[in-house]
Structure formats: C-alpha cells, structure tokens
Amino acid sequence: MKRKKLMKGIILPCLCLFLMTACSNKANDNTNKENSKGWQIVKKVPITHKANKVAFYNLDYGITVGYNGEIHYTTDQGETWPRAENQSHCQFGAEIVNEKVSYSVGNHKHLVKTVDGGKTWSRITDFGGATPNQCQMVSFINEKVGMIASQVQLAFTKDGGATWVEQKAPSKIMSIYMVNETDAYLVGLDKKLYVTKDAGVTWKNVAFDIEGFEDENTFSTPQACTLTISEDGKGQFLYLAKGGVLRCFETEDGFATVSKTCELNFSEKMSSSNKMYLSRDGKYLTLQSILCDEALILTYAE
View 1: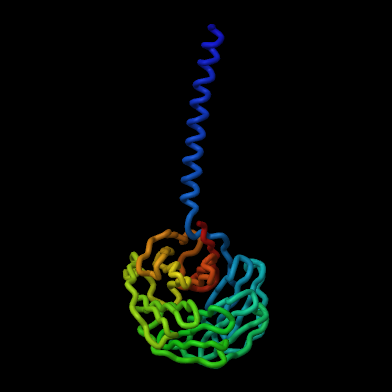
View 2: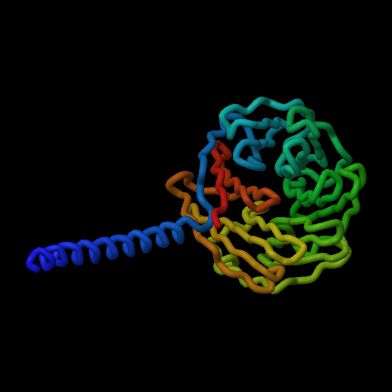
C-alpha cells in the first residue's frame, strides 16, 4: 500500500510537469509562428557595379540596370553579375516577366528588352523624355502587354513595345501596376490611388486608407512604393518610410479596404532605401540602398 502511494506521489507531479512543459512549448511554437509572418530578409547582396535599379525575380535570378545603359544579370543569388550586351542611354526601371523576358526603361526615350535571360538587350520603340522626365516605371503582364511611365507620361502596348498608345495620367506618377489588357492601377505623387478599366482612357480615384502614407516622413519619389493585385481584387501595397522602415498592407477587395500585415525595420541590415521591386507573383521583394551599392532580398511568409 505504501509502495502504491509512493508511486502515485512520483507519477502525478511528473505528469503535471510534462503537461505544463507541453503547453509551454505549444505556446512558444505559436508565438514563433506568429512572429514569422510577413516579409523577411533572406539575403543581402552587394552591388559593386554602377546601377540605378535592382530587381530580383526570385532568389536566384535578378538584373540591374543603370548608367550609360550598363546592365548586369545574376543566376546565383547575386554572387556573380555578368555584364550584358546593351547599347542605350541610362536605364532607370525594370520589369522581369520571366527568367527569359525582361524590359528596361530609361533616359532619352530609350527602352530595351531581353529574351535570353538578360544576356543581350535590344531597343524597342522609343517613349518618354529626358531627365527628369525619363521613364522610370514599367509593368508587363506577359511578353506583349504592358505599360510604362515617367512622372508625367504613361503609355500602353499590346505588341511588346513595337507601338505605344499614350494616355493622360490622372496625377504625377509614383508607381504603376498592369492587371490585364485593360485594367491598371496607378499611385500618384499626390498619395492617391487611381484605377483604369479601359487601358488608361479614363481613371477613377479609389478610396485609399493607408496608415502613414500621407505623412511627411514617407518618401514621395517614383518606385518608393509598389503594389500587386489580381483580377479578383486580392493584392498587396508596400511603401518605404524614412529611417529604414517598410510598411505592408493587403486587400481582398481592390483596395476599397486594407489591413496592415507587417512593419519591418531593416535599418540594421541597410541604412535606408528609396526604391523597391516586387515580383509579379508577390513573393519576392527587392529593396535597394539609396546609393545602390547593396540590396536586400525579402520573401513573404504566410
């Protein structure tokens, strides 16, 4: 009898301790899982050549475009950057359609395209102007259909840049995103969001309640914000605030309403950034330093 009482005195406390530890571990697991949501830095990439824009399509493949038409590409996460063949004026913006096809836009109306993964680039039909009105923004849904913009001009193409249809912008332009052949979004330097359903012929202002976006502490320069959105209205909006802060939002209804998903302080990795590139699938984000001598690659964790 005494032995049974002794065993009971040992087993019950041990069982309680086990259950308490299990619950504690489960709580820690949930906390870690919660903390892992949102955008996370996965790699810091030094940029040792001249560049104006850094863009990664995924963790492995990326391009830089820059001064005097100097373009580089990488297939090994930025470990090496072979120089591409290109003849153009300075380039300021890029869109990677896939690992073969990319577009770049720049000064003196010079627009270029690659179909071999960035190795060689060829001129397409000119559009835009000279600094400060050169094209800096570009968005393509596939190899043929897309739009380009400077701060004061924008145009659409359905033939891969062979021809352009210029449309009047509703505002000076900060960022653009093409959804399909007719639908596109535009973020103005007035910090307002506009949408077109007829390839830029008409634009409608969308109610846009983004925390802190209108504050003076946020950048108001082209490519300091970015968005992606599907035809069913699901999307993301990201913008850079001064001091090395990235603020992130999502929508389920075409930005009629938004919810904040994360706020990332990346200043310990990189002092500041005023340009970013978001892959069309919304999974990879590139932040580049103001001097464009380094970049951060981020991925989104659900």
